[in-house]
Length: 250
Image 1 (tube, helix red, strand yellow):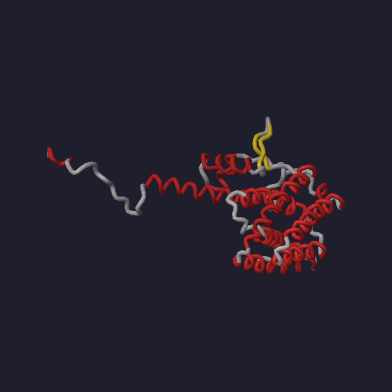
Image 2 (cartoon, rainbow, N blue to C red; image 1 turned 180 degrees about the vertical axis):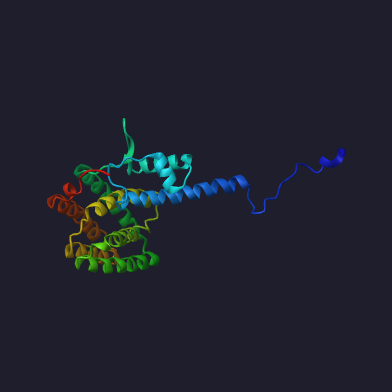
């Protein structure tokens, strides 16, 4: 009919309030985030060994993901330093070395000290609540580790990560927590592969850092951290833990 279009262009109302193509794209992004988290976790916690060659078809089948999304995930993990491209070989899980361990340790100290200073200055009650709550799980896992139960290693390190993150979350920066997380994850990977547990000494350092955080004593907290991290590295190298982890790849 001639006047049928007079009311203007047809506007489609979507049942869920958004275009279908947007929903599909967001679902794909969500799936990609989940797969990225799983693959990252498998690398960090030793499920995928250093130097292991990554075959796209095998990963696609194992994680039930499209090649396009898989490439995006691998690209992201490559940018995080967990996967590397080797000429003539392709993609492989990043190898480990004493040189890189020292570099990562140095990189971790800088943003963590700065973020902690900013966080302490906020005086946020929520920050203090998180700081107080974070060590509980860590303390339980440390007790098991001190008793020789290395089955608690993963939970112990997750507890350690939660504790260190709690100390900086109130830093009021959009970038610092993300920078710290990427560096910390690479450091965490070495800890998981090498089981760098120094016993009661490390436990005492965590306790001292907690007290410094509650007192908002920036200088004391930074001093403890700059002693704590290098001590972990030296313990690893002196005891040959890095050499023990090297062997034939699967």
